Image (cartoon, rainbow, N blue to C red; front, side, top):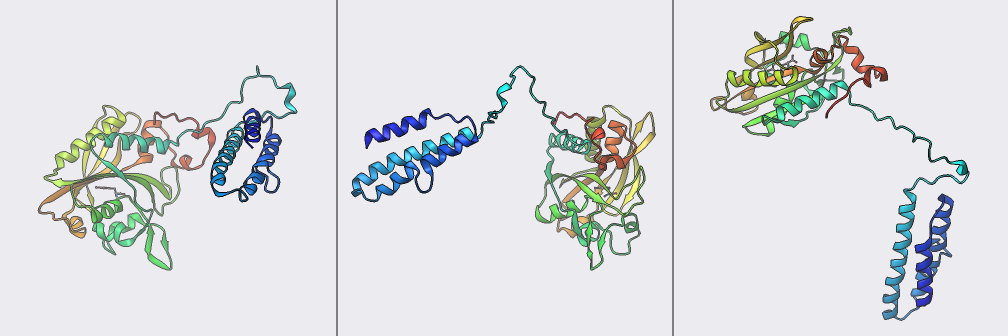
Length: 327
Ligand code: DAH
């Protein structure tokens, strides 16, 4: 028996498959269901007395593992087909085309990276939202005129379900589950019922940041926005313009100065309205916070000078392969 085992072991060790057929023949020879050498030995085991059964069982099992390992390793090889006898190893290899990140993903990663450095953690929220998270909890009750600017896609059968119009709904989802302090960033798609043109589309991307803690003030907001913008664009002129959003008070829009376009609005921001904090059971006597929402396509427009939003979503490979990223 020992001699037989040695011989089998030798045969397994010496085997080298030249192609997949060889490998399959090898498998059948040793592990074939009916006549495989090891299969037959396994069957014979049953007839041995119990102490021998254990010893030989182990030996055969080891052999089986050897065969399996051999098959696994050889399988991962790319066999050169037999007919490729004229294979010329001096011919350069086939080049593999590696994809590149979409410009929106590049900007998204950059924003995450910049804000991560000052303690913002990244979360995601659902694109299919309900009315309360998207509007009501953000101080935009039904019939509020600002809903008109954010008409979106509703389900006729259940108008309570909407495609989110902004990432501000993530503030609500996060604050409901986590008590302050919170320093959070979220990036994702948002949807609006817009007439499609070079400047507007039914879908775009936003990054939403918010920070809630004791004694958070407008100067913290300004400092954070300044840091974010200069990290993205270098030293540029920044302007805070008073504005209105139902969920922040006071509110501002931020413009940056660009030689081609002059002042360009790039984001909305403000101090989170106490009413919003109340809706998520945060005590506004103790906590305050700021929030901001930034349009990713807008940022990409400035960095890459792409002035037609539709091109981001056309999947034109000639456009997409132009972007290189360090991320
Ligand atoms: N949600 C706003 C929009 O889509 C953008 C925005 C403005 C977000 C002010 C904010 C904010 O967090 O504080 O138009």
